[in-house]
Image 1: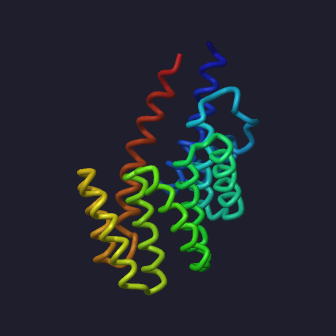
Image 2: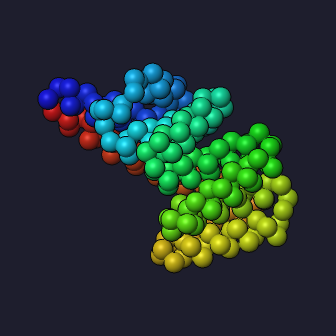
Image 3: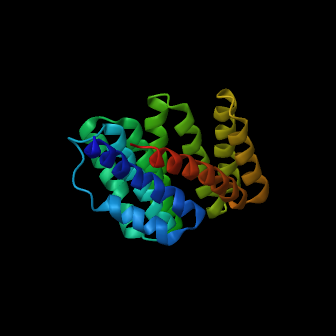
Length: 209
C-alpha cells in the first residue's frame, strides 16, 4: 500500500512542477521538476498517459523556468516516446511545444515548420481541442513576426474550432490576444487556474492513506 501511495506522489511531482512554474514559485517548481526529472524509467510502473505527460509537463515547466536546454530535451523525449507507443496526439502537442521554444529564441522559420507539422497531425486525427490551440500558437508566432494577415487567419481558425466545441473561455482568450497584441491576459487567467488546480492536487495528496 505504501509503495502505491509513493508512486502516486511521484507522479504528482511533474504536475506540481508545472503549476508552481506558472504561479511564479520558481524554487518550488525547480525542486518538483528535478525530483521528477531524475526518476528512473516508469514504463513498467505507470500508464502511457503519465509517462508522456510527464515529459510534456516537465518541458513546459523548464520553459517557464528558463531552462531551455532541458525543455528541448523533454519535448524531444516526449516525441520519441510518442513514436514508440504510437501516441500521435502527444507527438503533436510536443511539436507545438518545440515551436514555442523556437519562437522564444527568434527562430521563426523552424517554429513555423513545427507548428505546421503539429497542425497536420492533429487535423488528421480530428483532435479539435489541441488543433485549435495549435492554430492559436501559430497565430502568436505570426503575430510576433509582424505577419498580421496570417496571424488573423490562424486566430480566426482557432476561434471557429473553439466555438464548435462550445468553449467560450477559449474563444475569449483568442479574441483578447488579437485585441491586445500580446499574452498578458492569457498569463493572468492561466495563473488563476493554476492556483485552483494546485490546491486541488495538494488536497488529494494530503488524503492519500
